Amino acid sequence: MPGTYQAEFHHTKGKEELSLTRTLPDGTHDTSPVNWDEIHQLEDQTWDFKWNKSPALSRQIGKQLFTLLNGDRQTLLRALKEAEDYGEPFQLIVKAEGPASNLPFELLYHTDFLVPSQIPLIRRVSDRGIKRQPEPENRPLKILFMACSPWDTPPVLEFEKEEDTLFEVTKDLPVDIDVEDTGSLEGLGEWLDTNEYDIVNITGHADIDKEGTPIFWMEDDEGFAMPVKPAQLWKKLRLNLPGLVFLSGCRTGEAPEHVAALSFAHHLVSGHVSTVLGWGPIVSQPTPFRNFAIHSFNLFQHCFYIVICPSSNSIIPFFFLIFPHTSPIRFIGNRR
Image 1 (tube, rainbow, N blue to C red):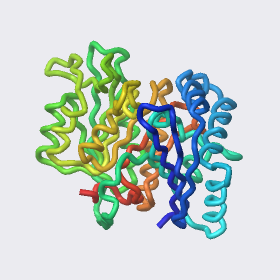
Image 2 (cartoon, helix red, strand yellow; image 1 turned 120 degrees about the vertical axis):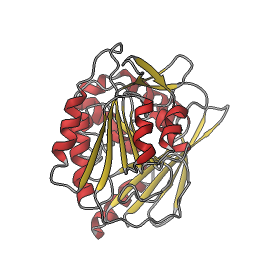
Image 3 (cartoon, rainbow, N blue to C red; image 1 turned 45 degrees about the vertical axis):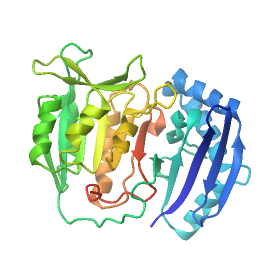
């Protein structure tokens, strides 16, 4: 079991008050207030997107986030050093509320970017299933790949490249892959009605509407755009709940700027999907899926703890791993 450092932000509703409780691997706690203005400044920098193309600005934001999680007592730094001294694995779990929920902790920087090379980062949204300890199964990993590219929703995606990448990086691994080729909600339901999957990978365009509702653009019977809300997707997924859902679409991990609003990924976890992966802001580079696939499936091969991580030194848009509890994820698909 890896050493776990937890950072939990507490937002006092109706007030501009934020605190942070840090829990060290030995179970000790440290709680301190968080500067509200500092959080908003970090939030403004995040949504400015200049860091997206600037390694220097990415490092700057990463250093500020590390200082925030580390605190005056240097708790994160001490926990990292202890794990290194003992040669033990280490993971960071963040549970954020209020303005801290959209901060890019995936950019954490201390002498180098820490995620994923030194720290697997998990974003926790509830304690459901915290006592469950599933055992890995000795069988191939089962994946359903689905691409949604409506004719009237530009740009038309080159989803064949993602499909090819998936087959390329798993060609030497014990993985069985099915492809859903209609891009429709009904097509997804037909596959899930008769098959069980460890991972369901849905790629396409996604957004947040003016009312703050997250949507994923799937296809209707004629290939035109059909907005799908979290509740609609959940009804299909519950036919045979997968261990992990990867929403490879812009803003699926982003919480809307509305009171008590949740991201698409968060909605699905609330509906009891074990683990959901979603992108944060708009994806502007073509490489994220390839890097995600290479990193993650190399780990699946060895049954290590799963690391969901940004790529290219975190200079591309980050994505969020939405996870309901603090236990480390083992071989996905055994959490049912």
